Amino acid sequence: MERRTIGAASLEVGAVGLGCMPMSWAYSGSRQRGEESLRAVHRALDLGSTLLDTADMYGPFTNELLVGRVLKERRAEAFVSTKVGLLVGEQHIVANGRPGYVRRACDASLRRLQTDVIDLYQLHRADPEVPVEETWGAMADLVRAGKVRALGLCAVGARAGRRAGARLHDGTIRQLERVQQVFPVSAVEAELSVWSPDALDALLPWCTARGVGFLAAMPLGNGYLTGTLTPGEGFEPDDLRARHPRFTAEMMASNQPIVAGLRRVAARHGDGVTPAHVAIAWVLAQGSHVVPVPGTKQERWVTQNASADTLHLTEADLTELATLPTAQGSWD
Ligand SMILES: NC(=O)c1ccc[n+]([C@@H]2O[C@H](COP(=O)([O-])OP(=O)(O)OC[C@H]3O[C@@H](n4cnc5c(N)ncnc54)[C@H](OP(=O)(O)O)[C@@H]3O)[C@@H](O)[C@H]2O)c1
Image 1 (cartoon, rainbow, N blue to C red):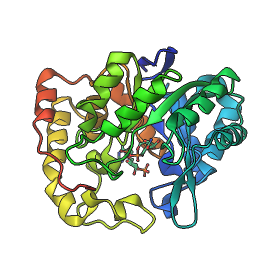
Image 2: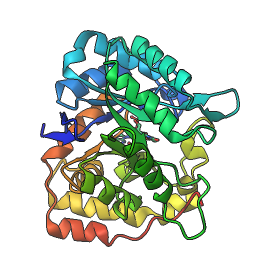
Image 3: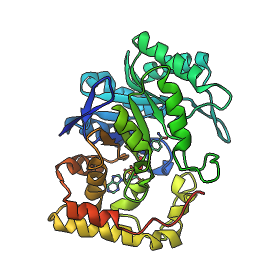
Image 4: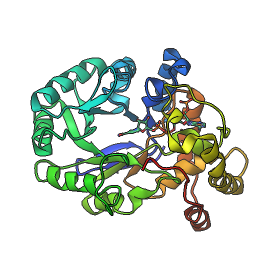
């Protein structure tokens, strides 16, 4: 697989990463299978998909434990990205950016991941009660202590309070400017896909201008862009799509022209090319420092997604994808 470099620290990873979240979090729990997930992570490493994206809150904790079982055997082949700053309670998720907590959380992640160093440690969300410089300073100390190789920041989601007229990522860019004064940012992780291209406006250019890598979360539109979901199919209550405004029966039907566009492009590239391939190849085409992290718990999808790096979209393909209808259904 093609290799890509992210950030000033020259971190090298396979061009297509693996999002480990669906193995333990956010997608229907009844479909989670530990052994199949383990096989999926092994398959990713076999194929050169070295970047494994996890977080302490996925599970919570069980996703890191799962990744740790693979790292125990194959640490040298993997690049592990995990996250700190969000705590899962009984009813809700809260931010904690206190330096003492960050230090303890890192030690706990290292234990669960069965490793002595995290390649990319990301601030999942800034804590409104703690100046972000303080949290970031504690994370920088972890780099100096050799527990972490590089730091990343996850973008603030669409639902976070936004000033009237502000662009989606203005708040994240303000945070990035502040933490950059304390210690270099190596990577930013944010949603980027054919149906959610907002990061192209300002966030990705911010990264490009500063040599910061970009991890593209949800590159498959939570599965929708693969064309394997049927409008009206139900989602279990613990599946994020049960509450996601783009996954009502009506919105799934309205957004079908986007899937049709991906299918048209796929068909031009021959048998076996899928909408998922095109969705991932579109993300790869956004810059040589952009690494999509498609999420899956299935070995077959890992295999399919990893092969997207051999699909080279033409200018005509990219133009067609750029002119697809805007996705219907928004959190705002
Ligand atoms: N930093 C953040 O705040 C943040 C937020 C969200 C996500 N993330 C990261 O980004 C990663 C990707 O996001 P995501 O997993 O939510 O969304 P995604 O990658 O857009 O889509 C995942 C969904 O697509 C399905 N899928 C994957 N490959 C497929 C294929 N080739 N054909 C058909 N279906 C396929 C998966 O099914 P199965 O589950 O059945 O395999 C899963 O339901 C996450 O795993 C996580 O690591 C980060």
